[in-house]
Length: 102
Image (cartoon, rainbow, N blue to C red; front, side):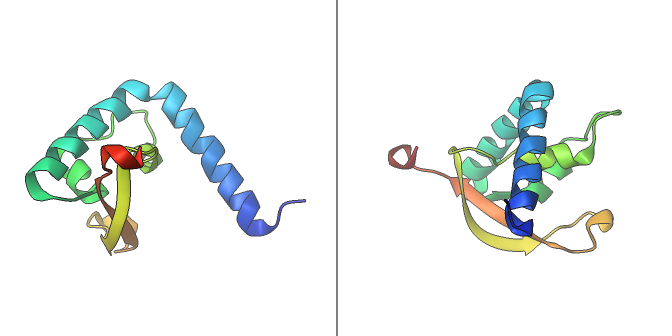
């Protein structure tokens, strides 16, 4: 039986997998942008993505939680979310993972 933390993680992972399958084209555009931002400024957060791309009508904003999923990016720090709906919650910042880390 899963404890509450494990259950929450399983629910999150299932939802992110759904986004990967259903919204792959949008996520690909976001990831391409994230790579470009990383190459230009050294790191990236979802704030940077939100400042360049709008979530399409009919798509839930939580799809953005899948942008940094996978081995292409590594978490390196934290910042506050900049969109008002997030109430300044703490979010991760990322850098590109080295090819050795993939």
